[in-house]
Image (cartoon, rainbow, N blue to C red):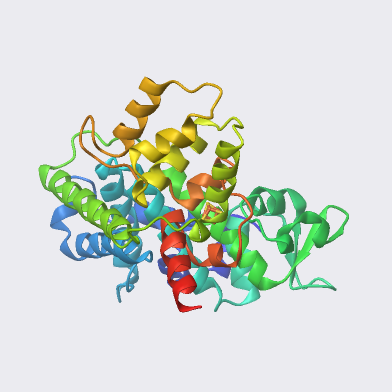
Length: 343
Ligand code: SF4
């Protein structure tokens, strides 16, 4: 689909709903706001701040503004706010919130609109195939389904013909969610923006505090007794590897340690677990555990990475039904613990 055809297939309402599309970015370039006047554009700025705080607190991007221009501009402004935080948790969280919000909206879209959105990501896609709603080039399938772990996503379980994978609407939308997340993460992958107005830096600091509260709330709600039956599948796999003295990758070891510290395992008990490792070094292990537990250095207690990060590093394993409802292994632990109690 040529660029002009795509712009016809998508309306300005669509660009407001999906402001991460390339053609929406073109519209932002024509709008009248810059980084230096950002905080004085009150409506745009308020909506941008609302986007980011909703993402941190509730994992969606909040209620859309009535005015389409405000909505599109606020997307760009929110990216600036998120980059200004220089906080990787907020960046990941915001990208995921944008992707999940888009997913919910795409469920109500017609086939033509979904095709146009997929084309914006350069997908090879055709609607109205004989078997399913769409057929897409298998490289686009593989690129995005790599993050999905249910057997329903395995390539062998798809209908394929001449390099095209046949899919229904719900699966195409789920794959598009991955594209959206990756695109927003890429746009946020800037270490800093120089010469930001002081007001923006102050608000960015507030957002970091809000994120710390949110992470703290998630870990404060944890049960006080370690319940191994409530471990998520990824942690069970790491724990089993650790207990069998198998080698753990750096991120695997950090994830296991941070998870166990946050659910209340003592540094002594952790040290005992890691003693079985062939590369065990008591002084170094104690230092790492105490550092993660916040008993050394800055005093910050680290939490384990969220699921999207663990998926990228192949630490996410044996996902189950509950994994579909959570975004962080500690959240899994809290929910599983509750369901075990009520069983
Ligand atoms: S989805 Fe999250 S909790 Fe579940 S196995 Fe993967 S990383 Fe662990």
